[in-house]
Amino acid sequence: MVIRQEQETEYQMIERVIIKAFENLERSDQTEHKLVTKLRNTEGYIPELALVATEDGEIVGHILLTKIQINNGTHSVTSLALAPVSVLPREQNKGIGKKLVQKGLQHAKQLGFPSVIVLGHPDYYVKFGFAKASSFDIHAPFEVPDEAFMALELEKGALEKVSGIVDYPPAFS
Image (cartoon, rainbow, N blue to C red; front, side, top):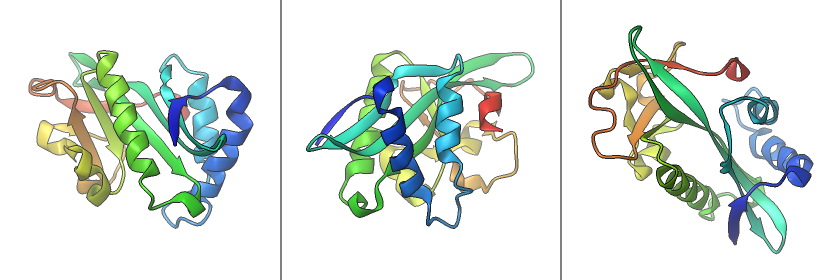
């Protein structure tokens, strides 16, 4: 398996992977592929943090991390949103998603981003060091289960003096 940056010529293939990955999930509204397309057209899109996993030349997984802000009314801090992680159903539970997340977080750290926010399954993301965002006094701009809204410091202490509401780009709406 190879993990590398997505290429513009692969957008249709990536869209199919995302659609397939979420088509049978109850907690999905099946619009994740539209979200990725919208996010690519925002200032928050970082090409180096849009990754694909390939096996024998076929795209089997995708991950996207985009810039967000954490605002407390007087101060704003840049962070990243991890969303979505997509793996073809026939390739799930083989460690592809894990490798995509690890590589995405590694690249984000190398690029100097201090933290990452994710809305996802707590049992999965805790494996990467994510903790409840509320423990950092960081909250979602909408109602979500506390344990599903998580944050990760890529730099030790990066969220110690950060608090507020995550400001997602309009593409997330």
